[in-house]
Length: 443
Image 1 (cartoon, rainbow, N blue to C red):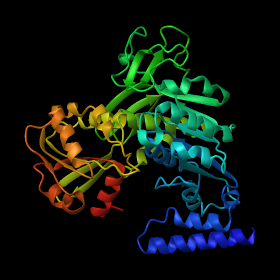
Image 2 (cartoon, one colour):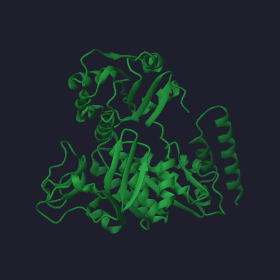
Image 3 (spheres, rainbow, N blue to C red):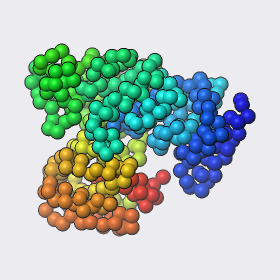
Image 4 (cartoon, rainbow, N blue to C red):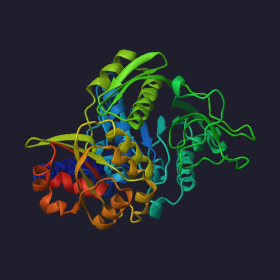
């Protein structure tokens, strides 16, 4: 080991120790210091290591956590960027303890815009494409721009196998043909038409045929633009799936059971979108040679991830926190909440910091109107754009009473303890969720 590499690792680990000792997040600074001392340190940290990158608009964090839980059944050491810190310094930090003489594996959540940067330093064995939906328009623009960014990133790691959501039309574009791709998807017979005669959901993304510009038709629609699609005027259609969910036995607010290629699994989270996330992880695990028993155990032991159906107790109150950041993701969370038939209280937090997306018009593309089907007893709004949030809910006419504004940084505990029900759902954008967890002293 070169002397500067030894010094870089030592200083990085010391800084990580003291950051954690002082109750700070040690996700970026240690890696930043190490990279400054030794710009080639990733060459050492990545020796004898398989890499899986997980990227896409929605589902990166849950898919990463699912896959890490699965791979721990086979590998002694599985490294990951738990915090989602996916810049170079964050990845270096996550690999600081990676032994150079032992075969290991790393599962890294990679922001769509960062794939092109990360692949300059690390070549992946597998790259999971979860989906691409409209998200942070001020940062990413339209979905086609995001797709082009991902394709550009893949040019740096062309030997990788892409594991892609075959139900999303954009992942069947011709640009994908220069890579090795394995597709996964959901095909439920009772939701399938006899012909391609179904229209995609209202306000769906990417439903125009890339060859002849006709509107795609569907035989199966799972949600948004996800399903079994075909162009009515040319040969563009859904790809052949390697991993298919043929049956969903149960789908409750905190549990789902389903069958993949004839094998039955369950996850301890709800929502069709999380079934997709689990399927992506299962597909990659199968590619890596995991058995059905390993996958079953890994899914069974997977715990909720912060902000993703995270359930906490405050006094007698059950509080469920869900991150929302774009129309498609929010609509899926709303569908999940609709499975709860009990009276409930609703808290919506809306910020417009850079990490949230400064354009909050997306709240008008979401189906808040569905919330009127819930037994809502009280509704609260907060965050930097709380007035916009309140106005959107008033337009949706979800609640006959007063929608109350409050300061979540200073009043959220009192609000929670005084809600009219013991069943509280929080829908929060990213920076508000992080601050909320700090206020509630959640680790």
